Each structure stands twice: as C-alpha cells, then as structure tokens.
Image (cartoon, rainbow, N blue to C red; front, side, top):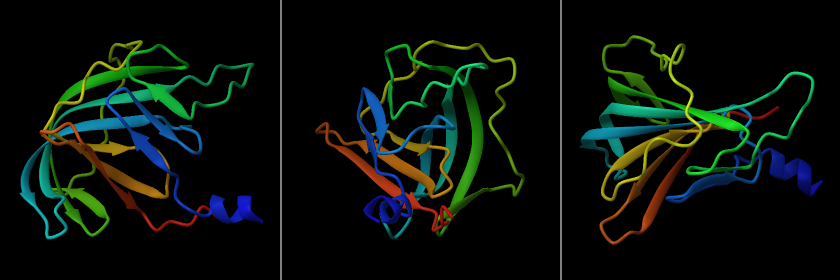
Length: 164
C-alpha cells in the first residue's frame, strides 16, 4: 500500500553541482536551461525570463537489451546517456505552474544534427538561475540557483497531473 501511495506523489529530485538524482528513474532524460531573469514574481521565483542556453541529457535505450534508466546522472562522468547543447533566445512567462513563450509560439529545443557529447558541457555558476525539466508529467520544472555563499536552492514546481 505504501508503494502505491508514494507512486502517486511527484518524484523527489536532488540537484548538486555534480549530479541530479531522483527516487524514480530518468526515463526521458533531463534538460537544463540557463536563464536571464527579466522579472521576479511575488513568490520570489523568475516570472519572465529568457533561455540563453540549454543542454539536454538523453538516455540510451539500446535495442535488444533493456538496461534500467538511471536514477542518477553525474554531469562529468559517462553513463548510459549523452548530451547535446545549443545557444538559445526564447523568452518565457510563467503563469501559475505553466510557462509559455512571450510570442505565443510553441517551441521545442532543436536537437537533430547536434553533436553528441559524453558528459555535461556546462557547469553551474553562482548567482545564476537555471530552469530544469525532468521529462516527468508530474513535474512542470525546477528553478535552481546557487547563491553567492554556495548554498543550493531548488524550487520544485509540481504540475498537479496524476500519474494514473
């Protein structure tokens, strides 16, 4: 019964300078967006911002075998995953738990033809905001910032979507 009830809760995510981990699995990978904040909302989180750069971790799902998707992705180590990166210039506005582009157009990161990298090509910077998506329908995203004292702050945004 406990396992069933905990499966209804959003996943627990931990982000550090070196890795991202979950109490589930990263079936669909992780995307990290480096953002320039234009305005902060009443909740103290970015309300309007521009994605300047993004990197995406894609999980290998080889044919013929089924390795377990990872529950931890180490940024500077090779694993059953690979990375792509791209400069960007997409402006977003958060409305409640959802975000939309300022111009109203639906956009997805363009990844076809980008070089596959064995490790994460970026490092977290202090006093820099990031928006992280984990490919789980229960998670809208996670705002992440390391303050000037080196304290890691993450703000989990549950989507409210039920897993069943």
